[in-house]
Image 1 (cartoon, helix red, strand yellow):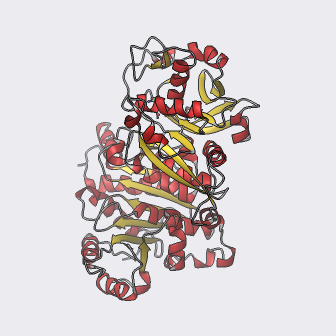
Image 2 (cartoon, helix red, strand yellow):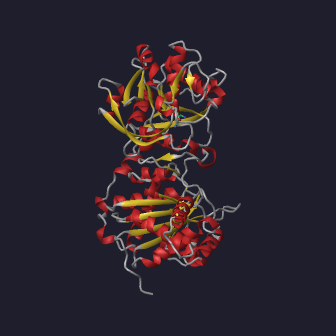
Image 3 (tube, protein in one colour):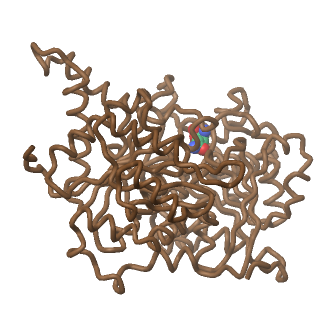
Length: 546
Ligand code: GLN
């Protein structure tokens, strides 16, 4: 059947998942994007989340991991963070499509009479809206990678897969490539098993999608026999079967796929080889950043209430990035804030931290422990970085222990406090409903000269992403500053950065610098922390691995 002409000149890579979720499909897709970007192509990405939530803003980090915040303030799935980190791009709300978003839009249009007289249906109305959104994001980019969350066979993802099938049918030849990322488990006697993959590809083919390329997730690389078996049963060439084995570091995945020439295969299929930068001239910044030797190491304590690493994934990653330029291996240990609530700090001190981070958070659980940890960092000179709630609680700790305002608190956590040092600003008090009052996304902070903030950012302003509702109470700023806590970054009446001159490194930000940290461009507050942590660590604390 002849293909209709494409409305855009972009190529599309659709990534589906087989057998089970949590295989690292997003990291695989992002790694493919990294390689194509190294070859000179402009890349963008769309993450499809087939759940009914319109966005991830209200989702529980226990279940879903961190809520990632984009430049435009969109609250999205943490996978978008992987795309931003791997591709070095800024995404917007349009790059995250959820079932909720699509249905909300289509139903709103139905209510306002846009489909007058018609029966509104999944095909074509929902599928058309999905295709329209994907094409809009792709516009102006050489390649658009679209990852479908979940696993093939889920009821929820059906309309999305059908849309991708239609899109592939509508686009010209060599413009669409399907990559299926699947699990290759090993039996008890270490034999790799391809049957689950065969079944998931069968499922995919039953809805009209033939994968062009299969990436097998397994503990060890796939051998030739396994590749041949997958190729035979899934109807792809043997050269189209790639390995995604366990690696020490997810940032090494692009290089591992490159060794198998996955990028060349993809470019060949998409007819892009003649436009690619020749191999010897490809961009190697990524490889150099993430594989540089790390002769030094530091221990960082992350004091938070969620044990799940995914709940603070951007903070873990930003700490790791900050070690790259100076060859520092950053070992981050989670310390449950509630274990410090009663003032016994041994769970923290026993890991001998060279630096302490308190990340963002909501609600009261574990806040006494966080305040105790901040006091410990301030009094013992351990480098400290407080992010959002970690910034606010540093103000609370200072007010309590230096200004002697014993019940000082954030009114979010203790509404009856007589000293709400963190509070809603006067004009926020009238708005009592929670939704819509959050300060979100990229906003500018003005930075004082002669401050630590200025030396870190090397500028008199910075643009960072926010996600908070409460602020430093203007009534307490003068007394806090007179007592030695300096607010060196501001945005109008709002305090954005705090520091304590004289302390080796005591830095807090009302914003979330972790969201803009990239392996090739670490975040300034994290770089500062990790450098200070290295100075704090004992000189003989060298990395035994190097
Ligand atoms: N709960 C605090 C607020 O709403 C801090 C938010 C955060 O840490 N992201 O202001």
